[in-house]
Length: 154
Image (cartoon, rainbow, N blue to C red; front, top):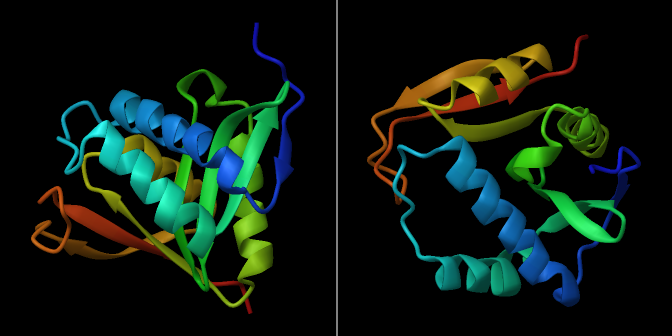
């Protein structure tokens, strides 16, 4: 049973890194089955432990004390936004995007793979627009990607 009461909280700490990485791994594998990951599970966990959680503004969504979603921000950029597959469609991603807009009111950008059409629809629904498409030669997966941007209405 999925608990509908999900809380967003800031500042994932070192003790959260493994759970945050596990959400990323499960979400990536479920959403992108045709995209081969550039790194194995252990390297991904190390990346979250030593880079994402300590160096980026990392937020977590929790339900019943368990991490069920994560968002990592850099100034003006959503670096990561992933939800446990069973928690998609419950409005958590919407809350994360609203929070990102509040944290970067001047505008945001993010990258996603071209094959990830559900992500495209999600971000477009939140006012993002595709600004650049690449052949993937600049990302580790060598997968064509797209940069989305959001600017506040003036």
